[in-house]
Length: 65
Image (cartoon, rainbow, N blue to C red; front, side, top):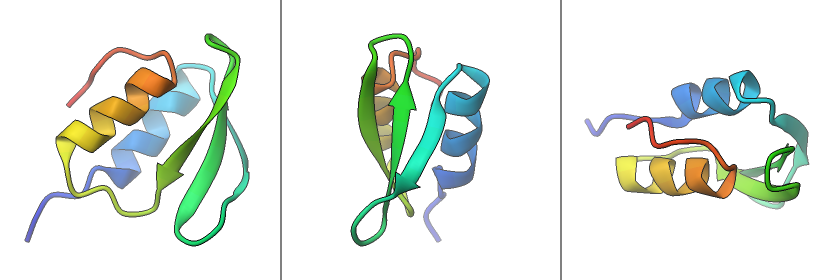
C-alpha cells in the first residue's frame, strides 16, 4: 500500500498560518495562504510526495516530504 500524505499535509499549512476555506468540487479542499495571499487546492488523497511538496510550494511553505 502506498503511503498517504494527506493527513500530514493538512497539519503543515495550519501550522504555517494557512486556513481552510471550504470543500471544493469532488475530492478537493480549498485553502488560503497568507504569505502569497492566494487560494490553493488540496486533494483528499495524496499518494505522491512530489504532489504533496508541490502543494506546499503553492502555499508558500518549504518542502517537507
